[in-house]
Amino acid sequence: MTVTDVIRSARAERVPAITDAIRPSGAGRDRAESVAARIMSVTLVVAVAGVAVQTVTDLVSFWAFDRAIELLLADSDVGVFASASIAATFTAALGAWLFSSVTPERRKLLWFIAGAAAFLSLDDQVGLHERAGELAEGAVGLEGWEPARLLWPVLFFPLLAALFFALWRLAGSLAPRARRLVNVGSALLAGAVALELLSAVVIRAGFDRGSLLYELEVVLEEGAELAGWILIAGALLSAFVLALREPAVRMAREGG
Image (cartoon, rainbow, N blue to C red):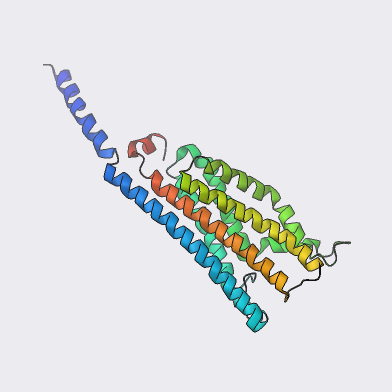
């Protein structure tokens, strides 16, 4: 046997060992699936509980304190629930970014989702959409309509439409349960935008702040937004955990 034959034989023996080492075990796959399922279960509980607490707190503030405690109002920019919405949106951005690191084939799509969600989180923090909406405050013919509520969805429409399309594209490649969370979350966010537009009609009809109809619109809109981002964030984080099951050699080969 020549030296070349000895080297080839050694390589042949090492390759199966290396392959077995980097291939995820059945126990590893089961654990990843268990963790992902737990994340989605917790996501549902957090979404339901968050919306319930936000709704009850806002309505108590409305009935008992005549909206005097701004910290407890669902539509307050300085309230506790504004911080919850900001955190949920940022978590969705983080989930998309983490998921992109282990799924090279969907990296650009996930980068866009992460960037859009991060921007919307920042927007909630500093009120960019409200400042943009103020441009319409002096518009002729829109008096009594609170034009700021009408303008910002129009200005943000290209970004929102692209984000919803990206989420729809992504959902088609996810596991069934995560796909449902993304689709339901996207539908809730779309509903929140529609309710924001509807709020201008409610105010135009004479049901301004302090009326029960206005308050019901507030809790529905803010609840849909909060739940929507929580569901999307949970789905992305669970998808990231499941993607970690992929062989390390595959991620290295594709630049993961």
